[in-house]
Image (cartoon, rainbow, N blue to C red):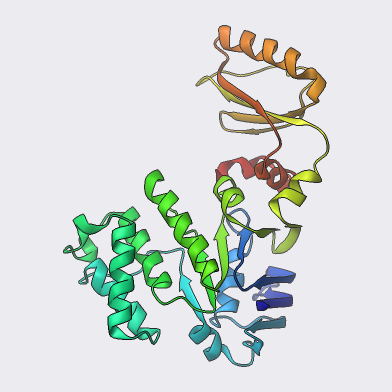
Length: 311
């Protein structure tokens, strides 16, 4: 069952700036759907329309079958939301903030308190349980904001860059909770530009750029469409430059010290010998050779080097 349906949605601001351009997608109950794209791609504008804060210029959005363009209040009731910006929780402890969010979403006091405590224990936030929001680090505040969205999840749960500033250990714990939200029946819309994390977490995804959907599908189906090749990733030594790339490296994309390209499987031995020479000459710090990843799909669809800045 599709709990979130977006059909041909466009949003044009004054001056003719199109933030969203004919976007269509759907998210099923029990599914984690990734919305990927660089900064300025139109992801946050689309989220604002889903939760009823902005009206689309054209198109239709339905949450649990209700047209929320006509009834934006229902969207705010049916969707729980973690925004990209930090949630203002000054003057409240993590537990108080989480419980308040749960009660505002209609949860029973004892159930909300138990669920809030379980989330605090899951993320090992006990050391901050008696501190006010103003004393919390950015990563802890981010986790509290996630818990506020997850304590009484909506039919649609929208998470906008939920792992920003979160340490690697708790990121793993967060992804466990994201999956549990889907298992509890929510349609989870994950908005992110961290492609490597998204690949491990989403069931389906759409890549959005300049307001348009430029690719969609499951991670596996999108990777299978990239042909029979391997990916070579190089990390250059600080200040080093590779003035001439070997002929076997195709479609190179450079992002800072990282360089990613394609090679044919039959060239793998030759590539390894060349990369080891580059290491010996102190031109590259390290390299990896492996199967295509979702990041390669992302780079192909976005089609420019700044795609590498997202990971």
